[in-house]
Image 1 (cartoon, rainbow, N blue to C red):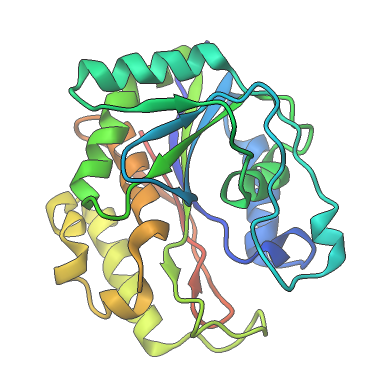
Image 2: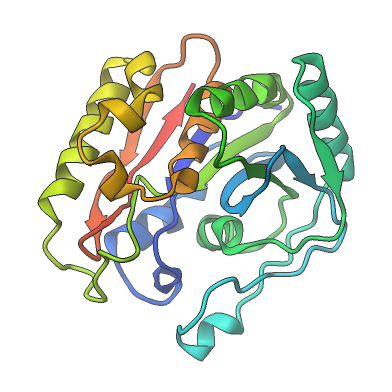
Length: 259
């Protein structure tokens, strides 16, 4: 089984499922560009908890956790299986690193997970286990979550952080190709530079060091999956910028791999 990459992807608006765009084309091509994983761990921005939670539901429902979109989006499903054994492996990996976590079996699969995976792996035949993020905890905390999970990559498990490189719903426009806002560009350029140069300490202090941090992430949950992916890259991760774009004026759609 080949060692799997650790990824961060931006899932953007649910409209990415039905609206042609560069980011949709990128996600559709992603599964063909990567070695096929045995299973996928998804650290999703749309599951926020006080402490790490792992979803081991053997028949997770597809949750349409969004409102006011075309009816066709609510008809979509992603019936990929779960893998309870992987959930237990995650629990042990966290415990080994002094991180308390819990398993639940009664939560559906949110669109932070199924939207990018339905585009990348439309057959829904790869087991998926979801991991929550903790908005009241730091970027470095999430880096440590990812670092604890990193050894699972050796067993064919892809670790995916799904969020948004920039994410301000109030500033977003309906028009996909709306002109990117200056303060969105400034933040995205800064964050890309930290990743390109491997300046991880600066990146983990993004809330005080990045330009327009509060404007781009009024709440941090969409940026935190990046740090899970970064930690899962290992002690000295290399990075690859897989995709970059700003859509709807305020949604940074960047994707990275860490190996």
